Image 1: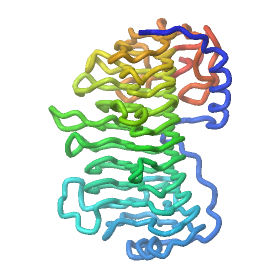
Image 2: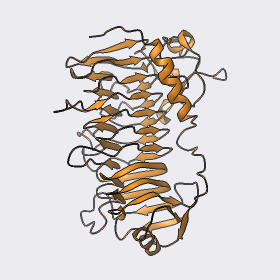
Image 3: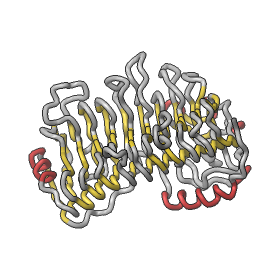
Image 4: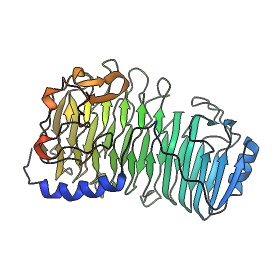
Length: 408
């Protein structure tokens, strides 16, 4: 069922605030250098020094890791004590220069190294930046209850046995709030160990921002279906997912998964300006799911799923009300399921690969051939596009995540 509303006034306010606050993007390989750390700075160049520095970490400390491969002998535990404003970061701006390595995502003999980095129980403000974390049986990064305002910046999480970034709630369902994940890469070099995986999995978290990242090969072995690449659920709310690129994942973004028992599975939030490409050989499901997630906004996404599933976007369950799905450019249907309701405005579901610059590499910038999208948008949407470039406003804007430049 589709319900019509006058959304124009809402969007003028909503998008002016969030676009200005978030700023411009040039993709996951263009992370601006972080400021020089202040407070206590500890420089390490061996695994032993790294373990000792983490074990002795106090508030206001930044651990700077010299380039190299660090085969961990135990999980780096940042928590179980009161810590404020701490950081674990590589000493260069290249996330490939520092590698934290585990015993392997399929190695059951992981001993004291089940995860790469663990936080929880009293950590308020933790930055993990400029490094790669790879080869852990469970999670490269796990954020447990008691963590506040985690920030992942310019990291690469690869080949974890379960969720690459896991954020857990406490026994009452209260999760980690105000997380920011940006300029990072989440991927499997081939496929996950089995179906039980996600790129980012947040339970009960509020106010997360996931932007300017690359998600690649978040897919299970043949015949299995991986969990959504970004999954915000179990009472999560007010998530922003924008300007990300997804290549060959099986399910890309889900706000909510199934009806909640005492509350909605997700509430509100915005999914906008994302590039999503999936080859025809990748078994999949809906690219974007709004599942028991009222008042959610899904606008200006470009989605090519190459016939792998009938629907590019699904909104589902009767708890999904007041949603808006507008100005998306897809190659498959947008469909309601299980009594969900939303306003559908200005979407185009007949996209083709020729409309985009280089779909197989995730480049869904529009070409001159994209006549169906140029310009055709309704008067709802984002004020900037995937690149952070200003959009034309109202009916002169392009559909999808890219506002085409005159050069293409």
